[in-house]
Length: 501
Image 1 (cartoon, rainbow, N blue to C red):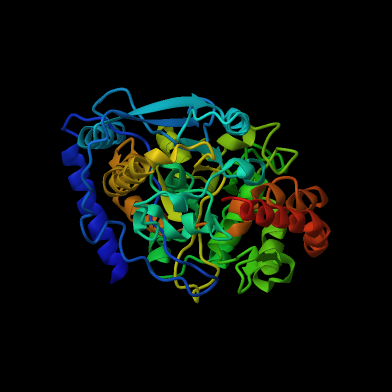
Image 2 (spheres, helix red, strand yellow):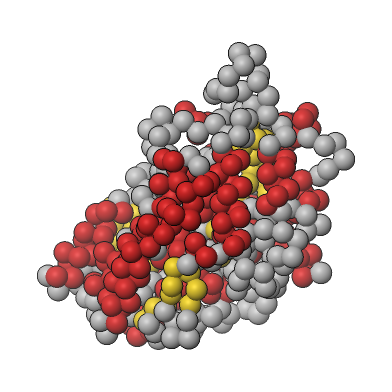
């Protein structure tokens, strides 16, 4: 019943959002999806993707205060949507929703948004350089979530900013609370931008391939609705549809596969683990994390099946020679080229699939089994907002009001517009995929491993060793070998956060 309520409310929000786009305004790109608190098997069903009550924006004249943001350049940071400002209304739903949001805020509070764009590495360097020089240049830095240890020494605690209601849905509490480390709120992952929503991992499928080679009595959408879209069901289907299409008795780029990864091997493993309810760490009574993936029976079971499937003929085509997906990237277009039933993508990618000749749909990532109450959507490799130690606390009230209002209005108005943009196809709006994407956005879940420990866990860590060995026999030994590095990373995080005032 809650799921039906959620879907109906989302559809109502879409109608409201469409009506709003006719109004002039100025808006920005600050979206992330509301989430639910989740653990391995006890995740609660999300109540709704819309606010149950209208949040009343406070009143204040900020007297032309300049809200200064250094943000990622969309032309260089192409895998995530971090838009904050747009130039003008252009009659496009998402663009105009951003424009209207910004106009509403800047007119109500009499302030201006000043945005500077750079790539992620430059932003991190600027944060360090300006902090060391004690120069107050930017109020907010949009930092990659994969470099937390590197920029922690230059961050202030968001707990010093009044007015932030971080338990509200528009802050995506399951995501933002992850960055409350040693009682210091070192970053925000809420709805100021679309960073979290646009990185929410889901699973497009080719409708024509399923109609031709799948079970005619099975609806993939109904598997989701009936709590039957599980990890084993996904593997069963993905391993059953392959074909040697060019008849050369070799598995190559021209054949048909169950799945194309869509990005990288590390995402293939990490995405399924999180959607299957696996936590990479456990947290003790003092709030400290211990990395214990090698002792997690569910994790080892899933990793074993994923590695074995990867090595099975016809399951996938992956031409890169490393876990990061760099090198020969021809495999990336396999889904678009009608060579795979499934692919693992994020909404930021899916928008670009509209040029496909074949019709496709969207599914959430599968649960581990039917006992897992809720779907869990991974979202990592994106951007979080950070507060520099150089921030002028005289502006704390202004910043708190603007951040709270920006997160709320994005949650209320821009997220539905984004959903609408993602599910548009060449022939119109895909209502069933909209229903599925509502589930995706409503179940975003951050895990301490892939999100906070990204560098130590997903990038050139034990996953790389498993990839190079191409064997499920080395899973536990590879994780154990990486433990010292991961444990030191966690110690550095704890030490650095304790030094934040």
